[in-house]
Structures are given as C-alpha cells and as structure tokens.
Amino acid sequence: MACKKLLLMFSLLPSLLLLISISPCVAENVTVSVYYETLCPYCGDFIVNHLVKLFQNGLISIVNLRMIPWGNALIQSNGNFTCQHGPDECFLNTIEACTVAVYPDVVKHFNFIYCVEHLTLQRKQAEWMSCFDTARLSKVPIDCYRNGYGKQLEQNYATETGQLNPPHRFVPWVVVNNQPLQEDFMNFASYVCKAYRGTKLPQACRSLLKSENLPKNSDSTNSVCYAGEETLTKS
Image (cartoon, rainbow, N blue to C red; front, side, top):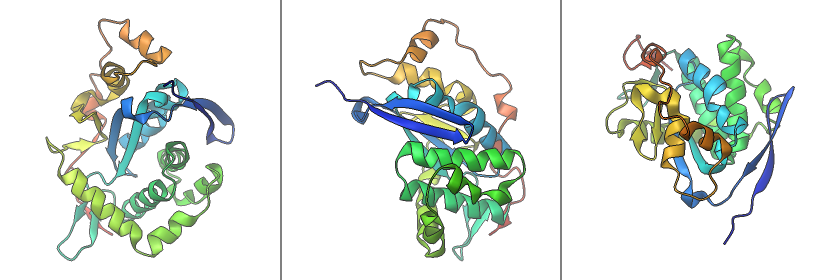
C-alpha cells in the first residue's frame, strides 16, 4: 500500500517558514537518536546548523528523530542532578524533555529545541520562554517541570544514556539504527541514507550516495563536550 504523505509547516524562526512532507510509514524509517545537553555550545551548533538540515532537505521523511537531553549529567546518591554546565543546564534539559513528552510530534518539539539552542549560541538562554511563542506552542511543558514529571523523564533519559554501548564519551553523541557514529557524527546524513531500506529515497540521498568518497570532518573530535571534561555543578 502506498504511503500517504502529510504536509507540515515547520517554522524555525519567525522569518523562516519551511513546508515539508513527512510520511507516516515510520516502520521503514531510520532511527536517529541524538544524545545532547542544552548548554554545550557544540550540541547547540550541531542542532542549529547541521541536524536542522533533516528538515530542510527532506531527509526527515525517512527518519525517526529522537532527542535525548541528558548528555554528561549525573544523578547523585540523594537523587539530585549534576550537570556539566550548571543548574541552568539541568533546568533546560528538563524543559526540553517535557516539551518532547508534551508535543511528541517531531516538528513541534524540534522547533522549540531549535529555538532554545539558537538562543544559547547567542548566550541569550535566559529568553528561553519566548521559544514557546516562536514554536507556536503552549507553556504546558512548564507544568510538567513543576509537577515533577520532568524529573522522571530525565531519570529515564539518564538510564538510557548510561546503557549506551559503547558508552558515550562526549556530546553530541549520535546513533543511527543502533550504530554509534562517534567522531563521525557530522556525516549523519550519509549514514541515514545508507541505512534506509524503503522505496522513497529522498533526492538528498541520491546526491550523497553518488559520491564514493564522502566528506569527513577531521575537526569533529574538537567540537564536542567530553564527559568529565569540566567540573559538574549541582542543580
């Protein structure tokens, strides 16, 4: 049976409006899991300048995108979270986890995450609440944070991150169909195209797969936040 396509408008910023086509036939899609933390500048750069291309070139039509905002954080013996970039990061990690839970539609929650990460790159993360308006979402995720459900979500993400095999060494840590890309995460699109087994190969994949020698990002090892690199700060 042919898959029907859904047309969705994706607004990254008020001045940028994208129309994308997403197929609901997710069984054939490639799962891309992104393990990140909200105030790591390299995570922000990856999300805002690279991962977003999934929505711009049509690859999102063959991708099940999972955003996991935990990163290099830890859970203390008393249950408190300790985050690499301080309490603000613990807070924003939880807000983004709540947004994913409240708005499971990838276009909606990625729109919000994109906005927050765009602000963090400008060191304007204190303006994060404006992203609900930018993404055209309600502020229900704040209730999720306040009632404690967000903490439960983060504990689940902590467990999932801790069970990665091999263990993550830095963030962003990208996994495509259970294959960790490690230092080659910038080439995630090529891995997506190679892993796809469906019949609706996007044009972006055809262009990528024509190249026998796919471009490598030799400096990607420096563009990450390493686990244990900095003193973690309690939330």
